[in-house]
Image: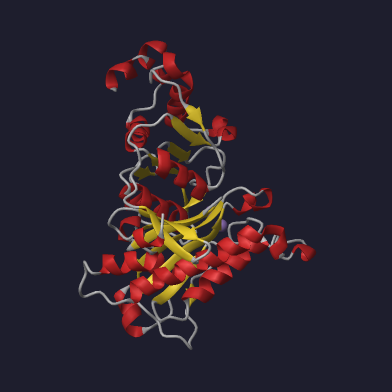
Length: 364
Ligand code: MN
Ligand code: MN
């Protein structure tokens, strides 16, 4: 379609801002800086081996490990650097936090400080990078506490511990066959495809909506023996297919890249589960609340879906630490509500009793 028929990301943001006559341009400028960071990362990812940025970070010294205990790829470190450098200078941010940095990042003294916080996973799914599978970036925008904005003081971890419903905006970029930026500023979800010739994100997926019903679920089945009873029940019922309590066949998907899973579900429905399990009871889940579960949760809910810990709405969770992990279930609303219902029901031996298993037929 010719350029004359599409909005650019810039145009979209300016038109959105007209709804708030008092708004300064800071927010739009921040989103455009993040979008530029994503374009740069898309470029590095697309060049692959040719860009010289594949493999583990500091491989010659045995590699380095981030605060999560994960091996850092060169592209993790590069993407983190790109996010920082593209956004720190403009005076829109009071500070940042990233998956790749243990502590909050302070805006250097030579730059003005602003009123927003940027929290990000600069390269999600990076363990997939060497096999050329989809990766992405995830980001969340919060307001800095007023006293921090007024005083320009350094930020503490506590400044970032805001529940998901406080997010001003959330988005992700997915670096797949095409590069897409999916964004919510709290008024629905819109998707922008990168035109590599113009270097512009063009609005191609206005007002994205997740289908309410689905026949696809995504879970890492190698953890099945550690699942809690409600999750096991849900998956068992999906696997039972046409002749089971659900009365229809399901497909299973697993990309092991959160952004790619979220994008698939946004486009065609489905449910994703990385629930809290009994594998290591010290760990309350696998994915990170502030820069994975909350931004993805906001996008999913803004698109008419639902995001949950399995027990409570994700966006209501009060964070307790910067790199907190949490169980994450999201996708088509009815499926997530069903999983929450299974968690709410008392756990008893009835689940394995075929008489009671039929009960679910009457509860639908
Ligand atoms: Mn990630
Ligand atoms: Mn990452």
